[in-house]
Length: 357
Image (tube, rainbow, N blue to C red; front, side, top):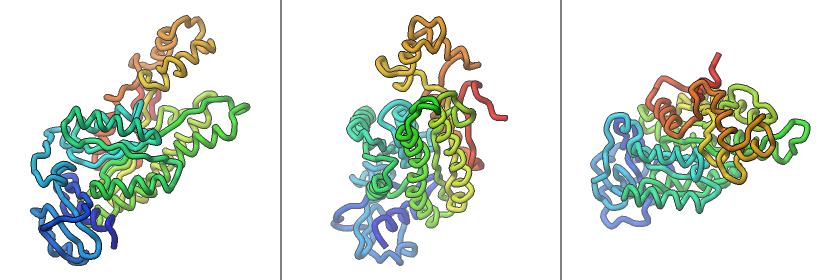
């Protein structure tokens, strides 16, 4: 038995409504509410306990959110209505320091989640977490380093999160890259980069997150957790001169369906969201390297003389007349979490640009 075994069991034992309490591994507690061996925990633990010492393993603090657990207070805010779907749930967002990822992080925090911003750009992740914590006057976000293409990095991320809060309720696999180019000229290294981040990264994260979720479920069979992959409309139809990206996203849907069938017995739902173009994000709108300026300078859009002309052209291809927003994406995430009878699905959020057959 180890720290992870104890922390995840305590999250399961404290399960109420839709999630367990926050469980924080501490160096030493002066007077814990319970001292016992690991194999005695099921019989001796009570939901009123705020601190536990497991012999030969360590001490653990328990609270409704991170600040309550560490301080011993009981003043965590409680969301109502739709917000309660993820109230004080532990959420992880890879690629969360910018773009769609930042929007997802902000949306989850707004709806009551405790969010770990996992990004290879750890400085950006920590800066965003600091800003959110200052805005909410509470520890609602944490920056954490993670390279989703490196298995050791993913393992370290998962371990640090479990030590800090006891488990993971919602994992958003959002990290992604795009390298466009003709199949005739695209380099092998660019193809491998896209595949490793978008496809292999989803696999590695699911591989190491799912055992944590399984442990929580084993302590409470009502405990349901969620893994959500953020793909693209390019996961639903081919993309001209963008085969590496589309192929990685198509492949991620295959993983989603396969993981969903395997993991539902552990209380884990696995779904994918396929959003349309996020025109306000850096991929499209960066003034130096964004697709709008690239397409304008390359003449890809006939007759376009300004960036707005290029944007208007692409928005005209969408029946709803605009690109996907972070708000659209958050609503889709909340739906997949709230809907208990849905797994293995690829949910389009494309404004009608791409429709399921």
